[in-house]
Image (tube, rainbow, N blue to C red; front, side, top):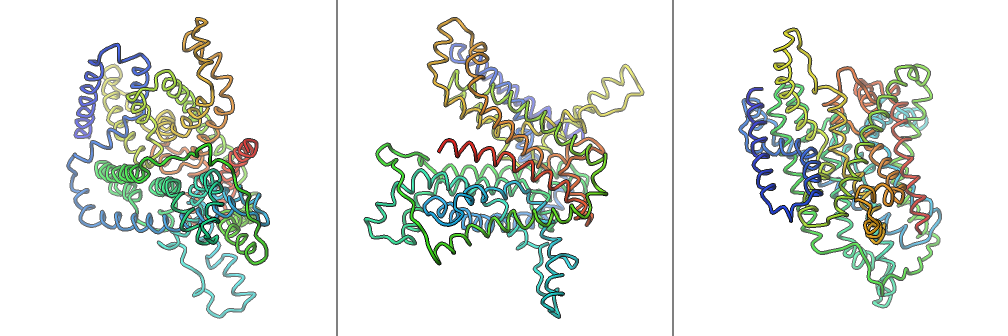
Length: 566
């Protein structure tokens, strides 16, 4: 721990030198808005900077053991999971987005939003639900054994707790990221060029592969990158299914080996992979933009599918919804009907209270900081300002376990210093102040999910004409008064959307909560995961359903907003 304190001082010294350089910049170029943005950005980036420093810090005996025996297993299984999941989410997301954007067939209006619903189900809930369904006591075994009379039923059941099971689970719950982004692109771009495809004599199949997919490549890459970020953040799914990824390595080093330095080294390498993915995604996109020219913005009429073609379209769109949402929810409802009498008690209400109060508090702070950063960018949209704000919102791309370790270790070191200081006045004092507190957990949520609120608020600010700000300033109002009296009333919908999105993400977050939570403090996500891990899958269903219902609400609200925009 002394070494950790030394490294914290080293990082602090480096930050101090950076601040000196920043403060030495000509005061005319360095405005108050930049200073505020730097302070907010630094507060958010401290855990990330701390983790990055461990790329260059030597490890101990535990790290050497992991490097020799476990590290390359983490690398191999992480990349296998990433590659195959990326392939399957691309196939599912692009094909469904193309169908609902360019064709009319039965239920297409319903599929437009039904295909988003799997996002409401966290991977770990889908994992143990499918595991229970295909277990020897599950409904699939019962059906095969009793109705089909198969003699060797167990041999027919797939092994859910495996790499292939993990690829399947993560693909069916994460494909909506690709679907949503690609569908938005097809809706704006692809239908504008269908007549071009027809004039070139291309069939529907040819136009999809030769025109639609190349045009949508930036959207596809962006969607797949989001999937990979979520995959690298996942802990519950891979833990339950027995897949050894980097996140498992972080928890193993921290909880099993009791070596925070080794956990930080693994976290640093995981952060390196995340940064590499973001870099490759940016470079691949290059100068591509999700926009159309005025002369090509006419939306072409959708083609009508009939007969067998319509059946195939319904099947392609229906299977992802069935596998990713409907089947798990029906199974959870059945389990909940069996166990609700034993589970729905005062302790369950405390779980809901803990989860909702935490999410509401952290989402509120994300909104406040998001408004501040978005408005600072609006006041001064310089290159330096953009970089500063970009750094403040990078947390969403970083796995929760990485952020949690970047907060936990410095918090413990600071607590030791605080305890020593307080003991100078009270020798009996020996209590951690920051570590295991609600405040440090909320701080972790803000670091992780600030970008979710910021992006929504920044989009809202972009829709407000700047002439309103200029008029307000010409009447003698200060920037703060302009924000309060002019901008905020026009940002109501964006603020609500920002709050809902952050709230739902926080409710579902598992790895960060597991590491930073106070002792004996449970949330819905933690309780559902712990019960499932103890093979009490049916008892976990009520908590899982509350999480899913909470996740459905923003999807329905945002779908209504999109419908009005149309």
